Image (cartoon, rainbow, N blue to C red; front, side, top):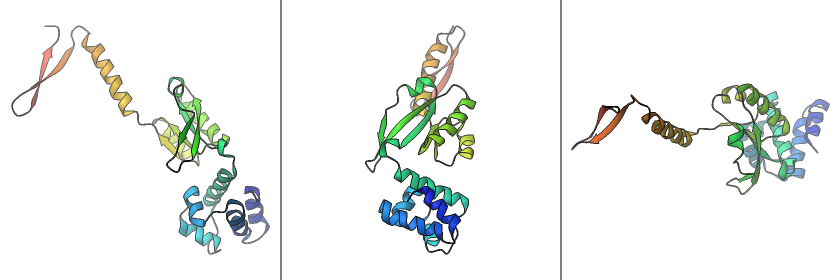
Length: 198
């Protein structure tokens, strides 16, 4: 059984989706409901109600189930996380990362140079089968609205601090710069503004 069997079961008869899902979990994947919930992101109570036919799944839940089944049935080397960033950033990325569970996940680069390119790359990454997307904070809110896979924002705090330090050194060399000199006193550091050109 595959994801197409899930859809066919849903269309064929009342409760067909649930029967197909039970068959996939028990026979094909050999997973418990709780294990499947961890992969799919669906709460165990929701999954229990669906499998016991106490609740019909909504479209969003069906999509999550189908994506999880697709993910679990796919070959291991096809699992990947998409990194959407400028060319200089993606050049130095590792080919794979290892999750806490020991599962190795490929990293696939999607180099971009504009916000529009990043949005297009995100859609392409989801169509390519990405498990999730890593992108810049400026495009993440838009991408989160478009995609149905997880989106993680890059928070480049350390590189921003390094860039500020480099810029500070350059700006200090500029004639007329008013810098800030910190001089320790007995009880606290006091800041004095000094004219660097004097």
